[in-house]
Length: 238
Image (cartoon, rainbow, N blue to C red; front, side, top):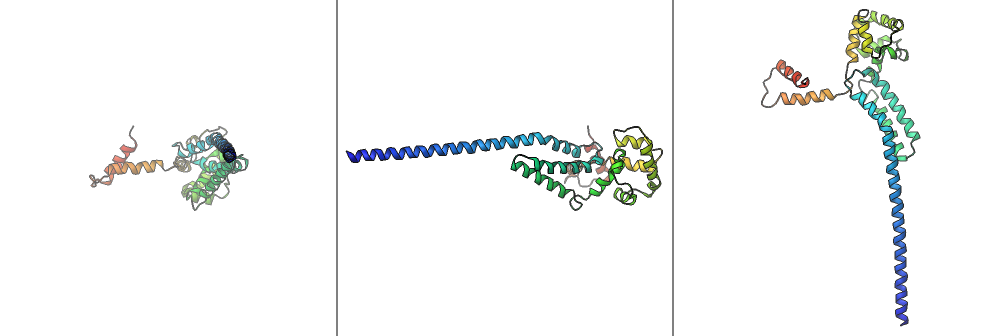
């Protein structure tokens, strides 16, 4: 009888220990789950509050509107904002993400990674509103970066004077150049052309897709003029 009682007491003791261990494990798992939930809420809140800035930058870069003169400043401002965001983030993951994005963007804006960075920096000079903030003394460098013809040399100084004389504010630099094209016809024609460059490759990629539909294995004898005409029809159809 004593042995049976001792055995039952031992089993009860071990059952109690097991239940305590299960309770501790369950509480620990609940704490881990709650922390993971808080981290997810923090991350989603971080994304929700900061994504609009990134989306606005993407809209500029992917837009078909003439905004090439804004791209360089946009990338510089975005890099500075990401660096500040990494230092002010309340979560380690958010700070790491912002730091990595800033480093990647700074790396991309180097001439080795972005061959047209000199052009994006120089084309700002064709925006009259940015003229006070851009170095204009070295016209030779700007001329080379923008591939300006020699016919624009004399008109350059006229342009600088026009910016100071014209008091009317233009919301778009294209409006300015169309307004002064009689004074600086060569420079205005080149400026209008450069300011309408797209800053994305979406149209180029679509043109390759259209070309694969026009020039197929069943139509390999199209002359260049007919191929170009069919591509214009494909790319400009309503």
